[in-house]
Amino acid sequence: MKAIHVTRLDGPDAVELQDAPAPSPVEGEVLIEVACAGVTFPELLQTYGQYQTKHEPPFILGSELAGTVVESRSSRFAPGDRVAAIIPSGAFAQFATAPEAMVLPLPEEVSLEAAAGMPMNVLTADFALRTRGHLQPGQRVLIHGAAGGLGSACVQIALAMGAEVIAVVSSDEKAAMATELGAQHVVRADGFKDAVKAIAPRGVDLVVDPVGGDRFTDSLRCLTTFGTLLVLGFTAGSIPEVKVNRLLLNNISVAGVGWGAALPSDPLMAQKQWAHLREYLVGGQLNPHIHARFSLDQAAVAIAELENRSVIGKVILNIQEDTHG
Image (cartoon, rainbow, N blue to C red; front, side, top):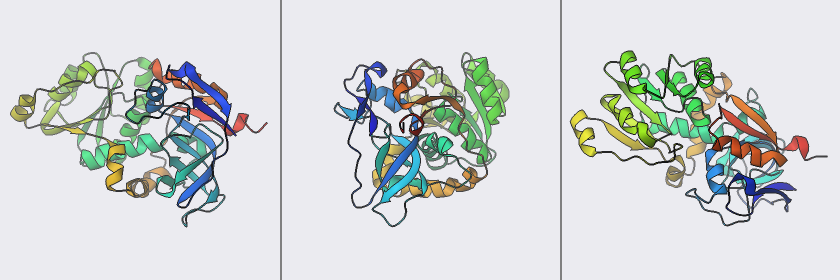
């Protein structure tokens, strides 16, 4: 089969399309013919060896996919089933194996392309808002990076849960997308604190922050009493620090959101989340905006899209369209 390998840790340009043996499922695994794969920020970091999960080169890149079951060594799936899946590596390939617990059945209303762009972002967003943020209907949520893959998933889930969303973006194009997603308010990253205070003078209940960097302190200032800032990542590059007296004086919290780190405590967590989200999936409330589509041999270009921070929504690799010939 054809697959995208990281051969050295020099960034997106170092990935190569190579032949590889097709994997075989062991007990409890599912073999999937991959139709599409989502390109995520961890993939970019892995090409530099900077992600917390380390793989020694050469390895096959890719963590989320959608496709059709070819062979199942579990009782839950049968050949022909349409599924999405999350795996540590190996999604950027014609075939991939995944443990049963990380294989997600697809409602017929969800296309394979849309499904490939959802698992990591949607499950992380659900974990952030529902599990770590305890979001309630009617609460106000400030979402940074609202036009990115994870940010847009957070916008959609917050809206589905009945929240009022303030989306933070950095351009007119991204503002248009946040509005299209349904965000009730859209503000620019520059000067966002004052804009948020004008919308919500008493502050917001939750701040969703996958960006980090120098906007962290102003995000804390946007919280209402008993509000929480959810830390999802650091796409800005720098990891901020907090003076904890600010938390004490204002009765606010900072909560880490490590979806992957929580999985070992509940191996069935992804399945439970997916079942909870099914209503939103069937109703069309979760549907990733596709920023760009690339063929498998264009994987380096697809990953580089994330590096230049121009992505609005989700980047997808259409794997089978150019690999059957």
